[in-house]
Length: 205
Image 1 (cartoon, one colour):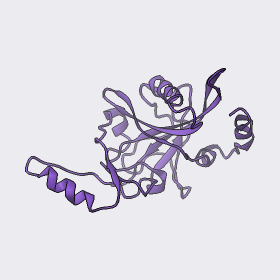
Image 2 (cartoon, helix red, strand yellow):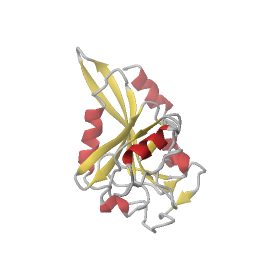
Image 3 (cartoon, helix red, strand yellow):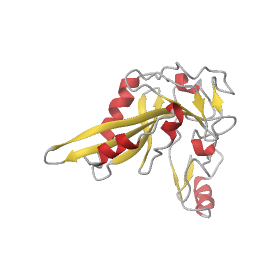
């Protein structure tokens, strides 16, 4: 999968299809003529997550804030979590690319709201697959939750990161860590402001 370095929100992402007849060197030289990019191994998600929308890798976003110091110890705070799903023929699940989002209960991994997109359209079920969104249970949830906590400690100088995780047959993998993750989206789900909560955590950072 190819991701342009200058773009975000799923824009410009494409899949590179290679067969045995393709000359890899020629393909590489052709790709170099495009904008700066990175190429990553394609993630093959588990069937359980593919049910939501098979064209895209459907991920969970877990936002973490790290407080404390190295000498006294760090503490990882889970701010909010949501499920991300692609829509129609899109190969990405980003909200900025038309994806659908829904809130997740951090204790159980069960989706607690209907789906929303950035235009505030609401979805009781996925418009393409018919899967009911509220009540969907994220498989192997405790693993995902713990991985996010571990990842938050890898680069402690970056205190606020949004982790995008995907479930494969071999377990959860990190798609990416976002150094400037959304703080507005989760307020769409419950219509509750989060400034007081954020201000308190910022004092501890």
